[in-house]
Amino acid sequence: MYKLIARDGNAKRAEFQTVHGTIQTPVFMNVGTAAAIKGAVATTDLKEIGTQVELSNTYHLHVRPGDKIVKQMGGLHKFMNWDRPILTDSGGFQVFSLAGLRKIKEEGVTFRSHIDGHKIFMGPEESMQIQSNLASTIAMAFDECPSSVAERSYVEDSVARTTRWLARCKTEMARLNSLEDTINKNQLLFGINQGAIFDDIRIDHAKAISEMNLDGYAVGGLAVGESHEEMYHILDVTVPHLPLEKPTYLMGVGTPANILEAVDRGVDFFDCVYPSRNGRHGHVYTNQGKRNLFNAKYELDQRPIEEGCQCPACRNYSRGYIRHLLKAKEMLGMRLCVLHNLYFYNTMMSEIRQAIEEGRYKEYKKQKLEGFLENDKK
Ligand SMILES: [Zn+2]
Image (tube, rainbow, N blue to C red; front, side, top):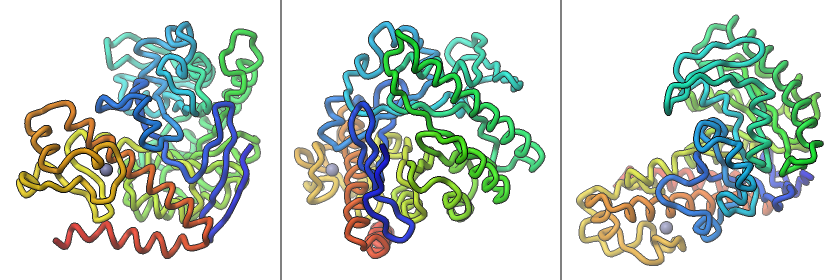
């Protein structure tokens, strides 16, 4: 299923076969929280901007419209008209970050919906059942993401519970995949490494979950307030203890520079809201760094966001026009910026894959990182 094609230092270039098609890695998954990429981007647009995997959030879809509704509509793929791979998160992160008033027990977590305040219970079994109803390609294990500043004793207890939860996720996923009316009977399960910023907890946990023979492994609980250096350090110590012959996913990360550094440390799956969130605020990524299209200097600028970019925005519209749309709060302004940003990320991943194959990843990374700083000098 997961075939390593090339390695360059620790960087991995692989193919991951799923029932919804083959994923070329390293890959950036495009985040569509509530089964849509924010910024009025449709699944038909995603094919044009090189998206391989769409990511949706279990918590959001469970709260609205409800995973049972999605199942009755034929599953997430049919619901949103997307025939390529979809990854769903476990709901854990949102439960711990978004939901109000929560109570953690061995069985799971009780919390209040951020939409209408009603009480919801979610544990490993519930998370697997919801993701099975959504029928995503890849389901994520239900875990707790302890704060990066949590006390050591809290993190130890939390990680031990996350390991016990993972075993329950695996059992429940196997049961669901064997049921007659399950939409995707080949749903895959990725486990998640936790341990905040404690090296030894991270390493012990990575070893423990690696023995559970899952379809892939994620490093979670990063990009939640620690420094970039701390994040890179955790990757340096943790990734070598995860299976080389399985996907390695860094959850919720990050900037183009973060991705370049993480690829160099053996990560090959990514997701982040930055390209869409920044796009909606008129912040666009280029090979010369980030630009703020609200800036007055773009008022009469006839050039596209980035010269040479083949995205739908750059092929058709000028910086000056998009700036006007953003200032006039026309939805099209946001949409064009989001399309450009996702295209930028997806294209960078394709360049990364090529550079690894050609054994020049370090050189590519260096040149790319230097380019990102250019805009700051102007
Ligand atoms: Zn563009």
